Image 1 (cartoon, helix red, strand yellow):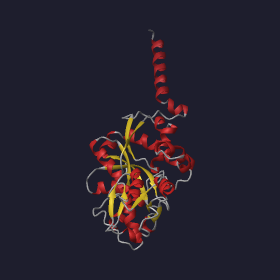
Image 2 (image 1 turned 90 degrees about the vertical axis):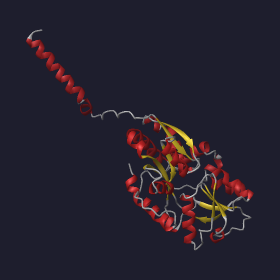
Image 3 (image 1 turned 120 degrees about the horizontal axis):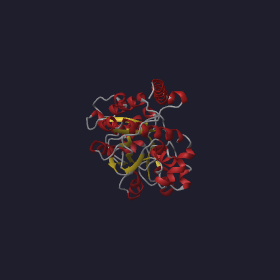
Length: 320
């Protein structure tokens, strides 16, 4: 090869290298997002209104767009999902903030908070009973059996805080653990005398057994109470940061969609087996798109004030 020929080839190679390495900048496009470490995410869920965005994201392909597939695993409540994170049966779990914060404070688990799920507002987190019950007022709950989906969770905290605000003694309440779908039948059998119900079980109980509210727990210090969110283990977050980010992006996108009541109604008829006539009148809370650390600090304060936490925990340190 002659010298001019060598010079031409060298210049061409240099030009190609420069063009390829900088093509994203030249075209105005961002480089492709690197693949996730784990394509399938095992997610713990409860069939309640809070997780509607998960099903919206599945329905609309948001998880698929981010390169992840979500495998849903049924759990009874937020506290039940934490052991699954610890032993590796779950990668991410839906759960209530009280259980997450208590587990972190007590060293039961090292958790990282992935996304917010649900925030309370009046008339959607109710203690209810049958119309023929002797329980008529918050004070009547003292000494009675009250159903909650899991003990020492946000349901119990809400009942305790609301009773305290009404001047009633929550320390004598016999909190009885059972799954949300079982509470209506338990009320009818008189196995329990009241239950903390959420949607879609509130509306179903009103229509089918004439259930009546005794106490709206989203009041006083519990106004706008953060109800639930999504968490993972610190180990999983450290080993799979791209997977967690992809999952969160898809979920947050669906959380925003859930601000449209019609979007929520379109999925609850499936995963929660809600009759369309009930879906149209559900009492909904709020679906935040970001975690509010100051509100979570308020949950810690409320837990301490109601005897449900003695240790210190900083929600800010649990953020990814």
